[in-house]
Length: 347
Image (cartoon, rainbow, N blue to C red):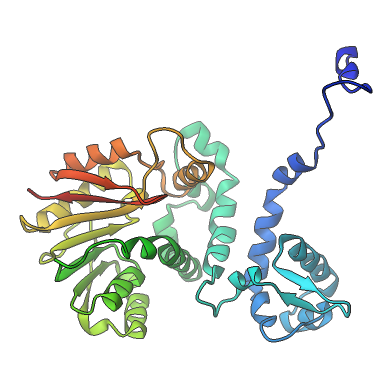
């Protein structure tokens, strides 16, 4: 250490040493991700649903090493997911309910998808920084949609993650949208149908078409049946790069365009426009990056999008340009937080 550096830490100096704990906590953030992933993978929270259990009891039920599990449980206490009583019995906290699979606010799908897909992909962040390309392709030796099509478990976790984001972010936003003039909407790339089901349950006069690829259709049929709205929703299998069903008064693209580069997003928008009547409206629900003053959450989300899907989040200006290039008129951003509405018309 130089004499100048040494002097800065001498008694009476105005410059105080900075404890390294916070820096190290950031360095080792991967620990948190993997502890949450492993506990979600094992279904640990479900095993603590009804009563407190010791490490030995949990280890026997889960088929894991009790000594290692003890360390995991101490970690979970630190994170706030569990508490332990004087007899060594572990119990879930209200915060821990997010890791249960049977609660309305469950985030198990997110934990499983983040731990198995996002986590290894972020390990190749340097690749994306150097090339500007998706790290997922380097990590898994294929694009994300090809990978999901070949891996049933990963596809299930991914769809659960999307459902949970839709439930927590998109559905509250939809409560603010005026469907009073709409009789039939088409959910383009609507995934497992959670958004379609929610809109149909709230608006009993509406009819819907869910347009999605083959590997998602079965899950969509199940969800719509369970929601009791399947009689008012037609499911059409197809590819939005080829053609999109006609007949809707409102075409919804919810978190679809963010997954595609400008060339492919333009194809989707043009196919929507080709299917739409002159009076139909387009409703985009998506993350929109502010032109300036982004939050750390928005920057992190944009980077995650690049690593997985090969593109960064679009700004408001970039969306307007894309929509106009597809032939739509009067694009209008309705700000509602991180996810926003963008409306546009054919004429």
